[in-house]
Length: 105
Image 1: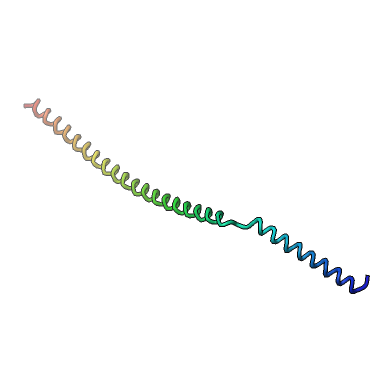
Image 2: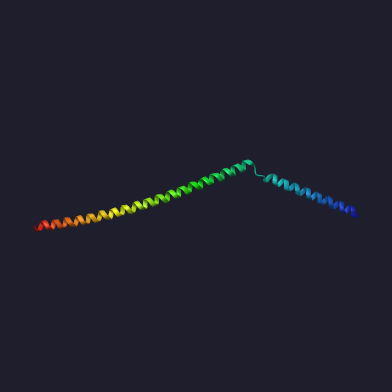
């Protein structure tokens, strides 16, 4: 095999290797291509996720507000209960004093 035949053979082998590589690349990208329907579905899913996150944030905010309202209402009710119990205690003391006073006279 002389030098010219060796160069031609090497060039042909390299060209065939290049063609096989290009074909493999084309074939892989042909099967991995994302269709427009898949892109639309991904877009819809991302929109639904965004809406779900907004709904979750609104629910958390509502629950925090409601918890603050209920805590405030509970504190007011407890204060009213203490005031009522103090008033009842004073009324019982007055009633006892009146009873003792009435028994003396």
